Length: 111
Image (cartoon, rainbow, N blue to C red; front, side):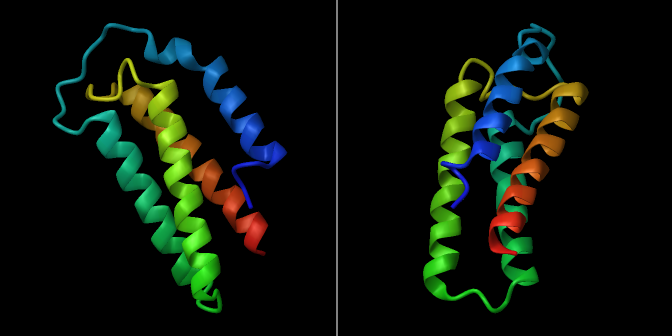
């Protein structure tokens, strides 16, 4: 659906090109980790997709959840060095925007 699409590959390339943002040793004081932020944002977007598309049958919803898990796993792999750190404000803003771009891929695939 999405994980094997050109759009997905482009987003991963965009993440790799933006890794400099995550190389800073600057530490945020927040308690929320990058893992928490990513997982929470992906879950929120999943719920939004399902609410916006009540006509989706269970098989499609399950496929979307599997792909969302793959997105989180890929992000964890790429960001493994900082996965359990609290994000800086710049990292948080980037990740929110980045994950929302994934939602757009799902929206396009469904619509």
